[in-house]
Image (cartoon, rainbow, N blue to C red; front, side, top):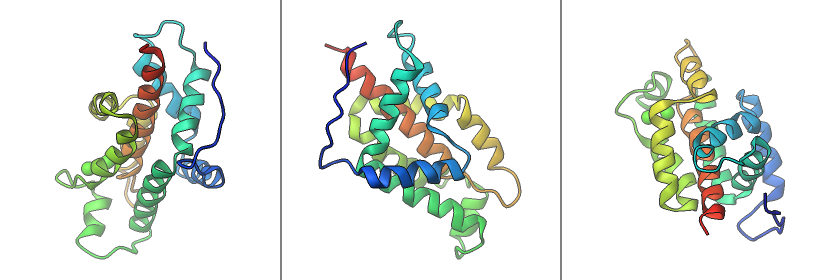
Length: 172
Ligand SMILES: [Ca+2]
Ligand SMILES: [Ca+2]
């Protein structure tokens, strides 16, 4: 495995990184579980891939300011929906994960977008198959009073973006 240089860029926010990791944890998701999806997406292309390497790339994705903004916004909407603090019709749409509501997927695309077109393919795959923690979040979101409408797409998008980040490094 090649060495990863850890240089901060203006696109990254390390303070907000801690907040975002904590928010995800509070919603029942840790970065390792996201890395497992990334690993599943990429292992067929890169036999020497390790879970640790996937976790590094998940971390890189979550350090990006643009990604952090999507996570913070999406999770907040899920939480407000659970607390009954949103007005209608949005409240029912989010609590019932209304099938024709696609703003959660659109927001997730803003995460995937950071890594170009491979990201979209990976996200489509994850969105369809709901592997690992995403399937769990999907089921949990169906419980009364629980809302994971934004969370499942955000997790899928981070995993897909990390897979794309890895793919870019190996496509030389
Ligand atoms: Ca949706
Ligand atoms: Ca969703």
